[in-house]
Amino acid sequence: MIDAHIHVTPPRLPGVGSLSPWLDTPAAVRADVLRREMQAAEVKQALAMGCWNASEEDPLGIAETLALARLVPGLFAIGVADPTRCDAAHLRRVESVLATKQVYALKGYLGYLPYAPDHPGYRPYYELAERYQLPMIFHTGDTYSPCAKLRYAQPLLVDDVAVDHPKVKFVLAHLGNPWLMDAAEVVCKNVNVWADLSGLVIGDANSFTAEQRQEMLAETQQALRRAFRYAERPNRFLYGSDWPLVPMAAYRAFIAAAIPELYHALIFEDNARALFRI
Ligand SMILES: [Zn+2]
Image 1: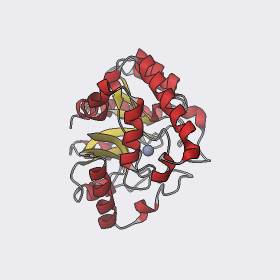
Image 2 (image 1 turned 180 degrees about the vertical axis):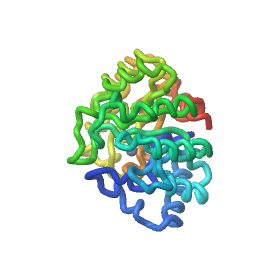
Image 3 (image 1 turned 60 degrees about the vertical axis):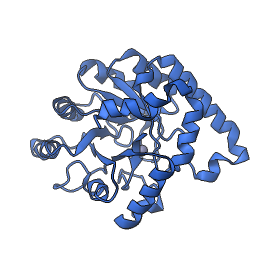
C-alpha cells in the first residue's frame, strides 16, 4: 500500500499556512505521528511533497523530508520545480540533487504560483524529468490560498505539455478537483498522464462519520467513480491522501468505497510502484 501524496513539512507557498499543527512539531514527534498513521492505514511507503523556495543548499526543498525519512522507513521525497528559478546556477544545483537519486518526482504548484504548465520557466524541469526519468506532478484544482490564481490550476492546461513532452510522465494531483471530468479527459487522451486521488475532501476523523457530511461525501465518491470510469485507464490512477489534511485510515476507506474492488491492487499499490519505481 503506497500513499503517493502526503506532506511532512509546511509547503511554504504564498498565502498557505502550515496545513496542520503537526507540521510545526519537532522531527521526532512528527516521525512518531507519521509512523502511527501509516501503520493504522497499512501504508508501507509514502511520498512527501517538498517545500517551496528553500535555501540554495536545498534547491528542491527536500532536506526536511530526507531528515524525517531517516526516522520513518518507507518515506520518499518529492522535490519542488520552481518556474521562477530556472537560471543556470539553480538548475545545476537541482541536477546535482537529482544525481543523488534521493528524489522520486518533481512537483509544480499550479495556481499557487501563477504560471501555466507551458510557461518557459517549467521547460528545464521537463528536460530534467525526462533525463532522470522522474514523474512531473502538478497541483491541479482548488487551492488553500487566497493568493492563488485558479485558472493556472485547471487540469486541462496539462494537456498542452503532455503533448509537447511525450517522454515526460505527468501526474494531476487531486484529479483536478473539482474539475474531475476535465482531469479524467486529460488522463484518457494522453498515455503519459496519471492522476492522484488525494485531498478530494479534507477534515478530521469525525468529519468522515458526521451525519451532516454524508451526502457531500457520497456525492464526491460518485463524482470520482464517474471520472474513473470515463477515463478507462485504471492503470493510471494513484492513491494519495494529502495527509495531514485527512487521517490516513479514514481517507483510505473513503477512496476504497468509491473505486471498484477489482482495481484496488492497481490504485493502492501497483500503479505507484511502477510509476515511481519503488
Ligand atoms: Zn497536497
